[in-house]
Image (cartoon, rainbow, N blue to C red; front, side, top):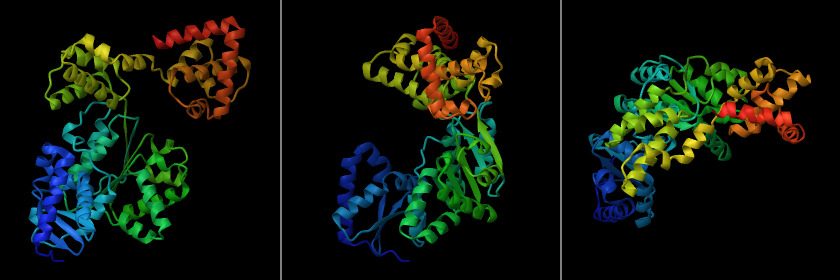
Length: 443
């Protein structure tokens, strides 16, 4: 394909678009990312632009290509698409298909690289496996399955893999997207009777990365298509990388054959962070921001906010923003004041495992009785108390609580909560038990 010569009217229209981009994004963003773009020419209805390097091209495609395309169409509705290439490609044919593949992939966060990932005992296996997959052109583990709770770093590692492959092996075709977007693309293909194009799109890549695969649990048709896509890529020795909030065997609503396939390669879990890792993450964040935060404040945050990394970094951002906007130094006192609501929530946070264990000890029953089908009053009453405490002391939903108690239905949990509330009024001893257990769990 040949790119047409840049006509005077196209140059004038591109100048108008650049003025609109400057107004929308401001001088700093415009100077960094948009002004360096150069106009190459026209290929049919596609306006071709060039970026100075691969990284800038990828960044502009992920963050500004849609706005550029909209503005171009507003000045000339004959323009249908925009393609951004690297300067080194100007003597080559323009690869429109590359841009189309980028539009399917989710945007990659430039902060989520291996260099910015803090490694500790809780995530060292997942990190090592992610680096191995990213650095090797040979398929080592297929699939690589990363799992862990919210905010522990799964998505960071997924993005880091994609960035590394794009940088070191730009010839490899990579698609990264959420399981939700995979389902959306599949439903869209069904609606427009274009499933063959969908299959070709996803089965012709070198690396397929699906985030939060638990989303397709219970969605049979999407699971079926994902199952066949997965098998096709593995058979062709193409790399598949998947993340979820649970291990393959624990994914509820997922077919057994799918669970089996997901566990074929390497399954690496990311545990909750320990104090040392949380402190390291905070220090790395402070260094990247170029700010000075007293060590006592970082140590305080690392001790107090243990739920997940996302919440930890959010707390740091809040105290830094407060200091900048209000003009007060960051101290232990101001930190406690600014984060009062967050610290109170973390102080209250109790796990369902802790509740079951403490209630079993208190009533002198076995921990396994919390999950058993036994209905004897000596067992059922402590179990109901534990369900009640899970409801009032955690943010878990009724179905989640029911599953934790031997797979019981949410209506069973509702009944238990109502029963205990009634007993707390009618039986003084039950009210005293609940009060004591709450104080034991919250302290």
